[in-house]
Length: 415
Ligand SMILES: Cc1ncc(COP(=O)(O)O)c(C=O)c1O
Image (cartoon, rainbow, N blue to C red; front, side, top):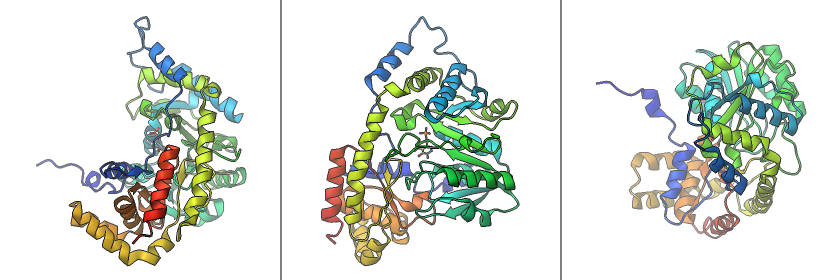
């Protein structure tokens, strides 16, 4: 009998989506595992979305150009100019099916069988999913980071002869750190010296605090040869529109080669994306990220008050990524007993219970969900060296955040 690809079956058990579903299945749980934006787009965006669909426009339901609408590619270039004083050639931009579409295509186009890809640990799980599971024979090296950043110094010793790509994320999901000029310059110099690409995922670009600035890597890759920048509208409350993009290295016909390997994105969504980027400064995003910053400032000191939790202040994103190692060490036996008991009540399979016993972060995730009614993401979802962490989102409503924290404070230690 024909069978599905066995690798597809093995696909990581703890994807963030499954975690959200776990929290949704728990009645009354406060779900702080979500990766969705914490706000809805402003009224002007709804008005424009309605206006866009009209019978007068004969092309709205037609195919767009595969690399994306010409006007949208110009709008993306103009947005980089206004935001970052960065000149981008619209001919190097390809519009993709969300940020994830841009990630898959970058890995497919710029790496081949046998190539080394360095993925920091922790990192957004889709990178490994795409590089190690969807593509054949890539040589994945994880770079254990904890709360550190990738730098030329910690990367250099890992580079092998087959090195082809480094994956960088700024602001970084899940730790929230952002890359500065010096680090980026060092990494671009190393890419030039050792001849590899940097895939720079700037999906979380607007979620930056303390008046810090996001720096697109092309500011430092002046030759535009070694880096690919990836963006998306997901953080702007428009995640369902599935609009992402890649700014590719300068090379003839690069966008057609890149996009030929994939289905292209929806015409109507591209029109709305153009409106959003052209009017970016007037669509109330600044206010929304100000609210995120206030919630971050409220949550992080409180997390650090929990005995055994350590959480540095994230510079960006909407995530807290506390280290919970000391908490587990202090209570491991009790946590295991409680999780086993609560799992049995819920008819959780032995296999899944075994995972909770094996991984500290899954143990804490389950304990928090069953005992405190708070959903989070176990650190192990972000890489094998990140089992001492959990991820909580602070883009949730302030009320939800307050309720979530008060439950943690009251119930976490009521063992
Ligand atoms: C770092 C990073 N890149 C890409 C994505 C995916 O973006 P999209 O929803 O546009 O596919 C996410 C989503 O959470 C992300 O955190």
